[in-house]
Length: 361
Ligand code: ADP
Image (cartoon, rainbow, N blue to C red; front, top):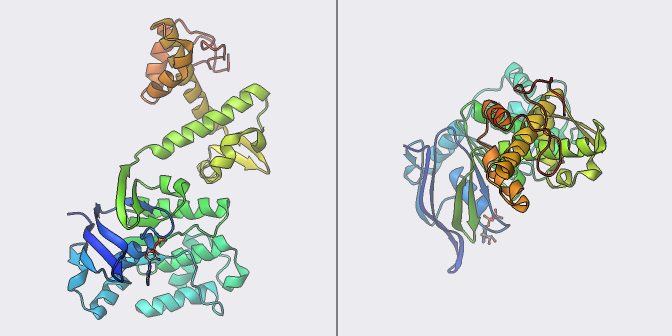
């Protein structure tokens, strides 16, 4: 049975305004779902209904087998307190309480305040040295991390987040997304509302709302890995042309389009980010080398063996490179007698199968 089951969910305001219009979908336990759509599409309405903060006009919501409509208001509040953690775009921290006190208040509302536990929860989101700061003394990203710690205080199995990175810069956006990724690894179910396609890409599945209707459900397994590959390849290419390790972000158009993803790459140890500079780490360099090698070998294969027109090489190679693991790439390399360059004349990085050590030819 899915963890969340939504059937024909409708929310009407007045006679004609459908904030939600017969939306149906389900979410498996441990799944990370992004809900995207333009402003006014019904995203917050949907999230509020899932979080027992609002009730539908029509339709049904089951969470963990429980039909929300069958609960009284008091039971719904209890259900929410036990199962759900909420993260909002606005932080909703009490300004006159420190980070620690804000958490202890949340604990008190759930059961009993426990200072050591609250301090540990702040430590888990990297704020161990900020416990006695007031919200005004914390950056936006730090305040959002306090909110995440607060949302986790009751150990919820379901985390609902409404534009959690809406007010953050890219670095904090990446930190908050990494926290969500670790919650996902812990097996919690995440539903994140966002209008930012880059944030939505980090989720496992994406659901699009337009005028209260569900218009698309797309599974995007491996999408971020593909984007990571693309960005590492782009850095490699600029490095190759300039023959320098540091690449100015100005010479990398991909940087401005995927800033937050570059910060995720940095968090994963694939690149080093400096002021206006990006460089591949040794690990990133090796991954980029493999990607470039696969691509150029695939181009060579299509050109030499299949006589494909040069204008079609890039696209065709792009389509198959994802399925070439290093062993298969080495086999193709040996089959082609260890070519030095791709059909466009760019060097093919040496592989384990080539006689010379790993160099860029
Ligand atoms: P989103 O979160 O995607 O921006 P919302 O769920 O906030 O969208 O809103 C969906 C639609 O419902 C909008 O047209 C909005 O104006 C309308 N709406 C939301 N709440 C109310 C309300 N309390 N009264 C009347 N209309 C509302």
